[in-house]
Length: 136
Image (tube, rainbow, N blue to C red; front, side):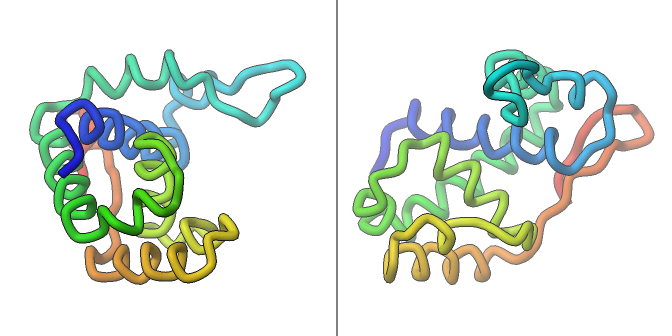
């Protein structure tokens, strides 16, 4: 089993991807880098925002990531992806974003990881009445 740091890195990137791609929060959308790498988000700043979401949101993401790793560790290792890229693609696959593990030229490994995401069902992030972000 991957260590706690791996899971934390994966879960934080999973939530960072959710916040960036699924919310219309101006503060989050302003984290787009400007310059030669335009189109990439400023990961360091976005991860600081992830640290401000409610503990229950972080825990829910963490538990899903633990389960995904437990069920797919062999394919995760075979993919050569780091924790952050696994978290990123886990979110994309679960939300039907049109890309994900299957889109990384991983052949059977990518297909198996993608199919595993299907078992987790769709996931959404939303802003609650308390102005905090939650997963559903």
